[in-house]
Length: 338
Image 1 (cartoon, helix red, strand yellow):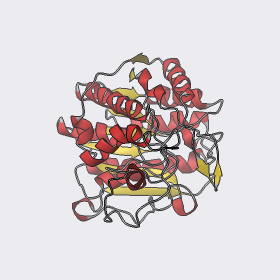
Image 2 (image 1 turned 60 degrees about the vertical axis):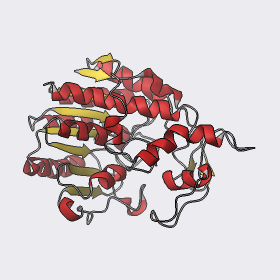
Image 3 (image 1 turned 90 degrees about the vertical axis):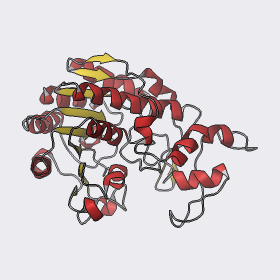
């Protein structure tokens, strides 16, 4: 299986993270790249650098206003006397329809949903090459490959069209799915991260040309809280094209696989000819976020169920945080897919 990674993703090294009112080390660290790469290579992947597909495919999903903010915000922030090294918003609009300020502090509150996505000097470069990684994997799928893996970091599924959040800046899986759609394919995005893919849902919520399915811990008491509930089915033309499968905290392999079958039936009914898997390995029993108790062999079973549909599969990396099992979980998934 071909795999893609750009080492410039490592220049984003966030320090700020807040949980339950406490400032903690950010778990989305560059070390994830080395462990995931080792896991991919153990599964037989040949890792190569992505091509540069430019801004066009990114701007197909993200607003020019938002992309301008991401590209320029840190330089502007650095001109503020006494500013921190990273952009962390401390004020947010009450509504997305409120005014758009000129101040970078005000724009940060508009474009950053929470304190989990601090912007540093290297954030834009890393996010850009993370998106190019997904686009390069999408290209080989469109050229006939049956499977490809994009080691994307920072991840993307919490990023809306004009809003960062939850460690995410550019929606890599969504960008890849849109690129596949524009090449004449009919993509379904299957999000198996322990957290709901709220940004992906938001981008495609009113569209019927991309199916979005997310299996995740019930957001009633789990991030992202405000999205991911079962009644969210899409809007307008997109009504019925979004499926959320929230599950109780602590479920294991059997319950997960039952929900996955329900999600894959929706993929069948949609008539997809390619599946974009937003792969979160944070459903594992030893992941720091402790949402589910999926085992390492369970990831192989999840992948095998997806592969059994007989469709090309593009795997885009989302969550999965530092634990001794991280690399092995990816090896298990990619081996099961093959």
